[in-house]
Structure formats: C-alpha cells, structure tokens
Length: 172
Image 1: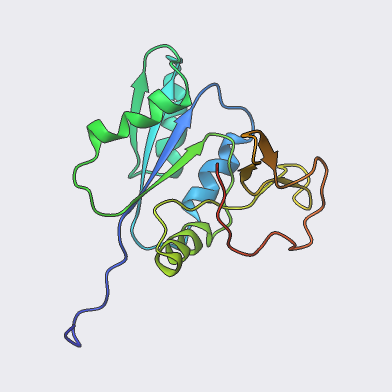
Image 2: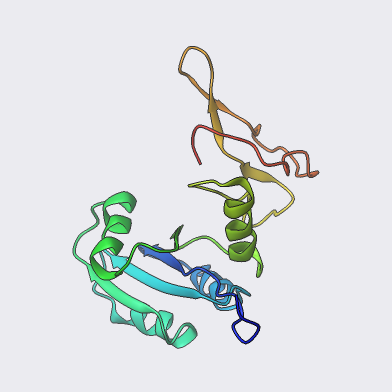
C-alpha cells in the first residue's frame, strides 16, 4: 500500500425490514445514523404499508437511504432477500435488521472487525431487552445431540459479560 492511500473499509449494506413500526422506530433510525463505521449504506424495505410517511421518516434521519415499498407482507426473509435485486457487487457485508433494533454506535465496526478476526462468514451481536438493557435476549442458539434447540441464554438472565466471548453457534 502506498503512503498516500489509506485503507478502505469494506462496504456494509444495512438492510432494514420495516413492518408497522412503532414509537421505537425513531430510535432505530437514530442509532443507524450514529454508526461510526465509515462505509455504511442503508436500504430500507417497507412491507405491507402504503403509508408514505414511513419513507419520509427514514429519509428525514437517513437522507442517503434507499427506500423501497414491498406489497403485502411476505415475511422478514423474503423481504430481506430483495436486497439482492437493488445492490450491485459482491464485495462487503450485509447487516440484516428488523425495524425494532437500536445499535450501539460502534456495533457495525465491531461486527466487521470480528468477521475479519475470526475469518467468519456470519457474525451476530449480543441482543438485550429494549426496555431493560441489562437483561439478555439472545446470544445465539445451539443444538443438542438430539437436534433440539438449546438456547444459550435463560429467560430473564442478567448481562454480566458472561457471554462476551466469541463462540460458534448454530443459529443467530
């Protein structure tokens, strides 16, 4: 690398699936806007709604976001998959979000760093309760030897950094 060229962060496309967002949605958008990652783009798919105010709300906080309307509500997966029709290229990462996720300002940076550190194809964050951020919601799911889901976190479990280590999980 030549001294006059700084390293470029790989692109991250945040794919936000929006379906009947509530009062929390403004916080979700503000958290995306506050990300410290230098190469983040947002694509929002508004499903099952003809309310144009949702698109205006997204563009009001994230003026460079691409907003697409999706007829009906085929579900999170089918809507998120539509990003492949609107994003060109195969370099970089996708960050899949529902409209009720508020990221810490360094969340995208931390996820990208961990993907490179672990040479991982998929990484995921620790999820905490919206109204009680000291209570864990998910850190992934394992499967026992009989193929049954085995959640790593117990209902109501307090976050005491006991699940902060990187580990392989079956489902994020």
